[in-house]
Image (cartoon, rainbow, N blue to C red; front, side):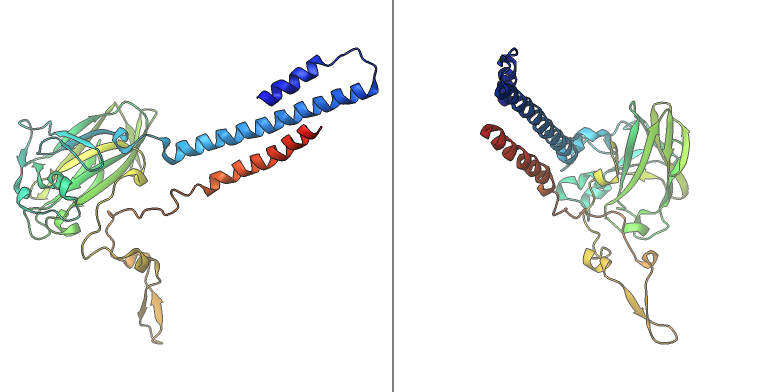
Amino acid sequence: MLLLHHISYSYKAWPQNTDDISGERTRQCVVMKWATARQVTGLLAAVLLLLAEQCWADGGGPSLTERVIWAVNSGGEAHVDVHGIHFKKDPLEGKVGKASDYGVRLPILRSSPEDQILYQTERYNEDTFGYEVPIRDEGEYILVLKFAEVYFAQSQQKVFDVRLNGHIVVKDMDIFDRVGHSTAHDEIVPFSIRRGKLSVKGEVSTFNGKLTVEFVKGYFDNPKVCALYVMKGTLDDVPKLQPHPGLEKPEEEEEEEEETEGGEEGGKKKLTPGSKTRVQSGPRTPNPYAADNSSLMFPILVAFGVFIPTLFCLCRL
């Protein structure tokens, strides 16, 4: 800015009524300097704006705690988990269903020691029950449902559905069948609210400002839930559970081509992706390039690479 001010002042202060040819050339040089300096300044401003936008996209957005708009520890007391999510005390206490802390005597696999309480307590009911979540803003949301089977020791003992504003989002939920006994399991349901419409699982319905999460009575025992929360964001924003013991495969093995012997010629054939046994919940692998800002340094180097020689040439004139 000092350079521009100096050049502009020099140009304005130059005598306008001179007929000397060298003076005219000097004025033209000053004009060229001023125009070049404007271009360089504009380039630097564009680079700084790009960097600011990139920094906001990388880490300047809302934190996980700010994204969560509603969270409840079903059948239990208020709790703040390791991610900073504030689970409030169950608002259905004394109103609907029964609270149980039967699971407190058991260690819960896949959950951190600090957050096992979220899976050790639960609310169940002999009929369909649920929660109402007020949502004012439009956007992309995630519903996270937390479960753990702490009583039954085999599948087909407790099976139920989960509805979201009338839409079935989890069908035939059998916790033991999915992860086994005393093991944490999260069901993650993305949905969106746009122009007064709720979209989930490819279905659309009118949204009146309240999200109704229902646990639907089935043929086997009673529906239940251990904890749940609603947050703004996408699937990548949801904290994942620890690997499932005995069912999770190392990431390197999943990337390798799996082959089995067989066929009439005794050859090998590749297994299809659907034939692999996978658990949907799992820890996110840290991105080793998350802190790499080399891509941001390139436009800075280019800007200064243009600015320094130009400034040097201007000073020589």
